[in-house]
Length: 61
Image 1 (spheres, rainbow, N blue to C red):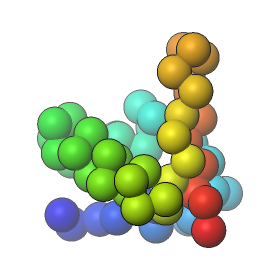
Image 2: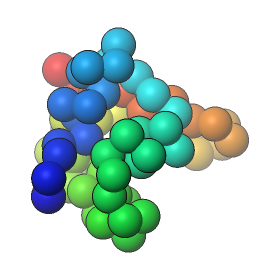
Image 3: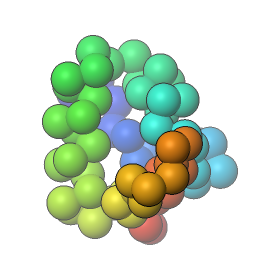
């Protein structure tokens, strides 16, 4: 992967709406969600609250 999503979040005040993070990553949507899953499992990104339509993703560290 070209960019690490948690690094993009760190550069953007540590939180972003998922759509904005995806657009900032420049990744294809399927690659974005694969990378997002990897970083959530690695506890680099907090898992979003899926009950909220515009969930905000945040870095853990």
